[in-house]
Image 1 (spheres, helix red, strand yellow):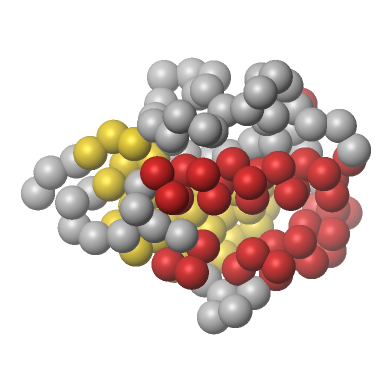
Image 2 (tube, one colour; image 1 turned 180 degrees about the vertical axis):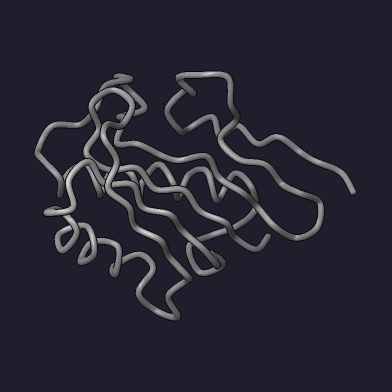
Length: 127
């Protein structure tokens, strides 16, 4: 078994000691949680939960592609919400990206997310 660290050049820089994803060498990719940081500015995007969720998916797409995967190969996600009242909005955007043959998912409300983000999503995908 080998472990390969993935850092996607087009994704926002990590804001801590972690990589964007890890390829297990066993056909599975584990992504770090993606928050709605604009890769160009390093700042959280403006526009509320809709804009933030769209940016999270844009960042997650770049990370999955850098790891040799895609949304179609995602088998599990975890959605972290700053406020569960945003669940329906996030769910409708989530369905655009992962609605066909939807992966397993957990969604939890947390006390806070890095940089004041409203949403964070991590994924496990097939390579």
